[in-house]
Length: 444
Image 1 (cartoon, rainbow, N blue to C red):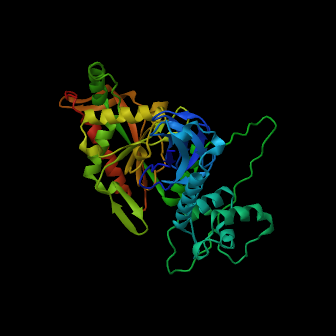
Image 2: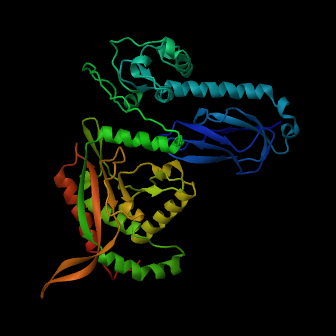
Image 3: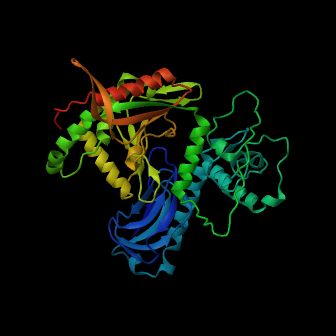
């Protein structure tokens, strides 16, 4: 009898666990090589998990909605041609299943042991914090929960038990009140005494008879949390510049048919914009930083994220790694590949990690400008507006003239903790300069 354990794949360096959102195979179903067995979701992206071997699914070790640590067994497959493949599901290797379950419990214990700092002197695992956030359990209430884990830590079972009896438990009034959302992003406490944080209550929302209540999907919840966190983290300032992109428009009109015929794909303005942004970042490297407490992390690599709208209406930001080292052809290939895979929900977690600067195109929706929210932990994001024909004053050796030009607004939102108006404004103007100086005779 030969069996194979399908494990939760590691979806990226920072991914420790994933949620099972749907099983595509039931117990007893046959599985071909590379056939999808289940779909999983991390806090970054949704993915499919294929089986590297052919056989029959004899045991699913987790249910839909369960959070599973990476490298933990999630299913047992009887390999094709083995005795187990033809045996009934109910008689499938109880000893082997017991061993796998024990491995799963050990893996879950390891995840619970990977702690995250909270607002007090106790530490909580990311899983516990996420449950507390979903159930509206405050940090003051978390502090009152007796922990049965190692060193008195609160386990998943402890907090679920607390939630079930939540109405009978009240936190002492002397405890520090801090929402779990803030605790997740709060660094470990220093020697300074804790300060009470007053969070305004959510405004009440009235619902009339004709209103429709739509529950947010998982991705929309993540986006909402990330946007609120960004506004709480960074004091946002936005600067604007109007750029004359006539040369870019003329060059693209001339090159797009030749490029499409040669490469079999279209060339958009996005790789052209990214090239200009990458050049400006090299001129102003302090725009390519992150903030860690009182430290500024100056990024060596220039990894530019491009915000992409999904058919569902949600937003995702795939990242072009090493954008400053690519020529325009390479940027175009990367942009098209990431955009196509984003629309097909085929992005890998690594495709949306490691960004150091973000570009978003609000002009694609007919907007002339926007004030985007910073994609943490970055410190700046630039939006490009729609390109409009306008009369503009041009300086010539024969004097000033009025001509029809292609104009576009650029807006840069930046973190005023580390990016002042001088740096933010100068960087944005440099991007505009590179766009206006585009060589209409260049080849791709």
